[in-house]
Length: 324
Image (cartoon, rainbow, N blue to C red; front, side, top):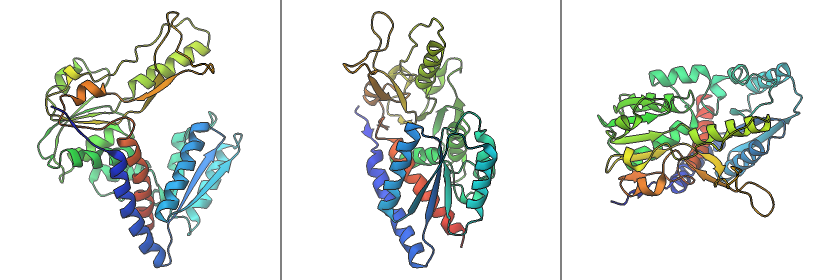
């Protein structure tokens, strides 16, 4: 069977339209939504993401401010600035762009953001509310995965659901969302070290893959190579292969891995004429063969990613609504 492709771009467009309507109501009431992004240093990926956030905010009527701070900004200075944003009535929501410079403890700084202004939904208080099902905001990527999952499998009640991944901001929140009474899936949580992972995934009616294992292996290889250690090319093959997936299953691939297209006979990553490594963007799932037997599946790219950004906008509006 050929799987239904769950189009994240189309879903994100619908969500942005809904967000724009809500933002418009708040603006008409004299309370425009304002999202402030804090960027410490000049990380290229973080800057690109911030620019994309700015464009998306503009498209839905959310005011966006990028607050850029120097690479050498101390942790105390950053905490003080976040405190000012927490106290500023005109700021609806705050997002801290990652990664942070090495001298700053991300966990400590994230906790300094007012939970009521936490655009990413990752403050411990908001995570606790997610556990009880009483939160106004939640982590954006799990929300995006759930949005697409509902489109691929509208009735999740009782469904055998396997989540492969246990991270604090993706795997665990997805498992909690699936267990909420309004969803009532039957959830098993696995990870890359689970013994006989295929035993669990093969019985899943719904499979959520969220490990980013290939990225982890590639990053580890790069660090060791940069340190001058002798290293062999890492195994960057997909974690979830077709023989691990049940016929007709709904498959949500949350991972986004930026890895080389391959290695040459000397074990070096393939490079283009400009000397740069040739890369590809893939998920945890071996997409084409799995799509041939699944009932529905998300692509990478174009699946969970676009919806994640839309969920950030939804969280910003939710923060503004909570300030009523």
